[in-house]
Length: 399
Image: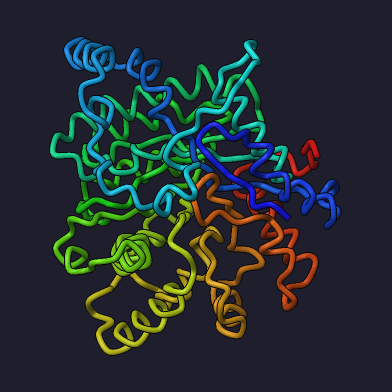
């Protein structure tokens, strides 16, 4: 059998042909499947997104730089595009660029690409995140996160979400500027297709600071969750000692969420805002039992340092937090079984594909786990998300 060659022009449906067959084989037509983490390569639509920038000077600079193609990253973004290792030496290029042919003209090109992925993966609802913008938390100009985050939200709402109500998003929150974060939640929180709020985790802001209490209160009023989407930052002083992308990817996506989770729990955010759901995205699951055990062990010896807690840290992590599956560490099945039990996966775990990144997962990753009941599989693949995000639980996929 010839090896499939994949390039930036390859049709999504061809890349995911095996996924469509996989979904049909397992009878997913009658299963609600929600993908809580897929990605939009927003830099391809940058010439449109920058039209939504409110500051006239920043907008003019962005348009001029885009027209002149000055530099590799589009104007305003701070990601280190020179360290392009996601594509594994160019062998898996989907997350670097998407240039496949789209003939449809009645909806935006990005809508078509998302629909192709949904229909091929057997997805009923897909939550779409940006990609290069995940680095904005480390931008040296905090106001740039405000301008670009707001522009991206407006672009998504008007051009993408309005075209297909199966496509959802967690609105980008400019977390480094708390007052603007509150403003963003108030402005976009009422949109039905904005089902929550996203904080990109690679940043040095303490999530427990009093500056964020109003933000959490407003999010709780909207009854929509906050999601911490992890990422990597190779310029972090500790991670700079790692000389392989493999090691940085393994540690970086976990480290930022571990730090935020520790502060989130020990400073009693779940007690202060009991109706605010938190979701921890794209950092895998293996770190969660480790952190549960470490925090419980230390808390039992130093409870006076976390006076707002009324139960063990692990209990908050098991009852008040939700986790996405990708990238779920499957190489040690017994350890995975213990992990899913410790996080109460039947109610707290949400399926995520992370399409189109090199390590994306199919729904069968959950379906094929032998130690889960059918009800647990149905919950993880879609019913948990329907409950958390108030989605219609009726399957709507097109296979």
